[in-house]
Length: 284
DNA sequence: AAAGTTAACAACCGCCACAAC
DNA sequence: AGTTGTGGCGGTTGTTAACTT
Image (cartoon, rainbow, N blue to C red; front, side, top):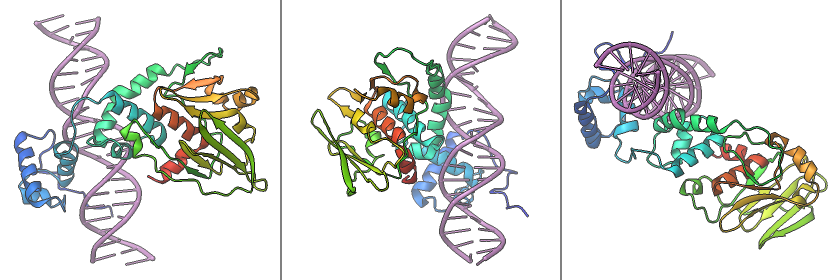
């Protein structure tokens, strides 16, 4: 036996809502709230099913809904969030105040997806000159992490600020194998000699913990994440460049310096490289 | 100007998770 | 513990306006 349908279809209005219907729904919810969507249309005198009322309210009539064109910042946020969250429109919408999942989904299918597809023809680059990573490119998750902590002290993008939680690293690794500093940043890498787990701490911008044993400790001598006032860059410098190139071969030839369009892209790249997006997903 | 195509967006449908019973 | 009702979610469709041929 199947479930009873959510509403009796016969005799109910379908299709676009009229201004009169909108007004009835708005005034009813203002007076009585919407504790029971199924019962609401009957109580309000609307010839609609509860689902339809809920959808109309949630996607169109709710007072805090922001309508109109998406800003460049919002579009960038959707693209970046979609890289991590996929088609979880409600989760994406939760990061964009005033925007609904339905609206974001529509924008994605009508604008952003096409923009990315146009941007996609990522032929492997052979030159070693500085280049910007395409936003749509799939990111490698070569490096495994079992735990991830990240602090973003000064985010310029309000949508990103709420995405990440601040948390200091408290891990005590058995032995310290590497100490890095770069342009005022205090980066510290420790390795548990028994388990092979690697702990990275960057007190200025982020901390990562427990990357697992499958990465070479020398990697962290060579890879420094850094930022200055105008750029967010991943520097892959000096020795062992060929090995790093192999690690990240999914990206095509690795540039010695990758410059990102925005701080958000920079952070998402770090998350993707460390598998941190898995932890992020778990926390949502 | 008419027909055909595409873009934009509102709305619907079916499924799922979860709370209540 | 199993069943049912409900809200919420993501995929999809329908409609209409805008654009192209």
